[in-house]
Image 1 (cartoon, rainbow, N blue to C red):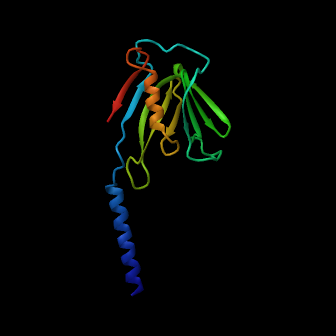
Image 2: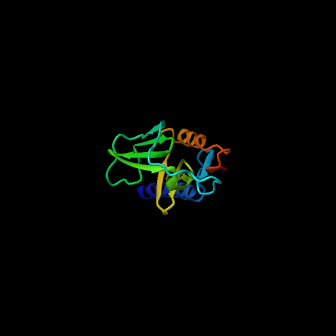
Image 3: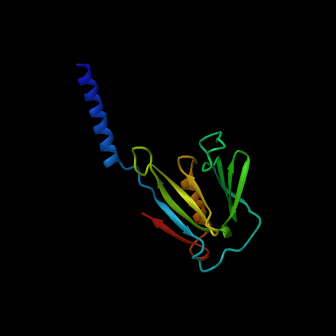
Length: 162
């Protein structure tokens, strides 16, 4: 009797897992944007100072382990660049160093597209990922970044992604 109960529970659990793997539920839809700096008709000037602070996106976690290389505690948006902060270390990224900022969907174990993120693509093929599951208000940060590069200036090409 106990064998049938255990086999029945395992069969139900197996059917549930197979269903979730074959056809996972889809997360919310996001309005993501691609920003390409190399396609602009006007090149972005090479500067070495950040300018005024525009927006700060804080991380959801207070402490990040040294082994977690792709998590950021804070992202600051300035007029001429972005500062990424992790455990008292800062990485300064100027806009003239970037090739593009590309969106990406991040899947969880059973939900497809649960979170979103952006990949900062550098001109030297380096890449830094920032994710909405780690940072609060990442969407607001990208909106403010898009406002820095209106279409009239021609410094960057901004495209909506469906």
